Amino acid sequence: MAATTGATATPGVAPETFHYYLVWLIFCGLGVLIPFYYSVEGRKRFVKNKPVIKYMLDRYLGWFAIICILGFPLIFARAYLYEYFFAWRVWRYLWLAGLLAWAIVWIIYLVRKYPQERDNYVAYQNRQQYIPKGNKRKTKTASTR
Image (tube, rainbow, N blue to C red; front, side, top):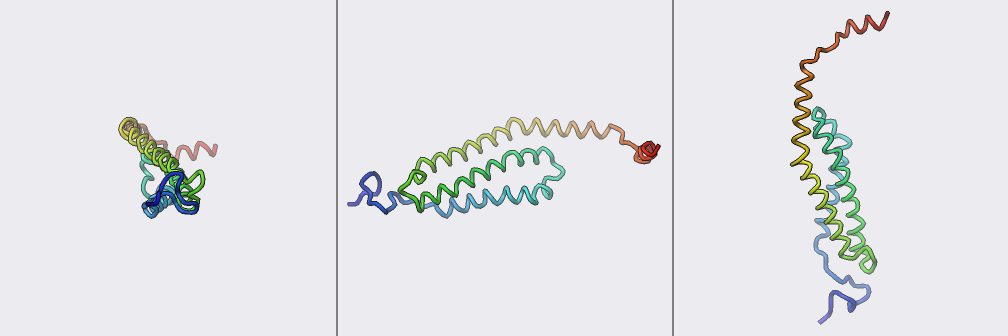
């Protein structure tokens, strides 16, 4: 009976089987592509007139991309550098803990701060509709004098 973990593992053989390489790579790939698409095109297309949502996505999608970028070297180390420091299981658990902490912070923002910011923006828009707009013709003639 061969040992698969611990100090008795055969050198050159991975000490554990990790079954989620493809899922990890797809998740990290999408976690990088979604913020990239948002920053290039989605920001102009989807949230152009929604500054509160734009602020929220600007704030949280960048951190999500950083977490997913860090996932690539961790899975690479697990697959190919399994005898070294960054292949340890603790790094994958710390990565998942960071992802979980990011999700909790975003959920807390959505529950506590987002409704207040949304209501403040609606009130601001309401106030702005009663403020008279400047006449472009008057400002143009005043600037030529």
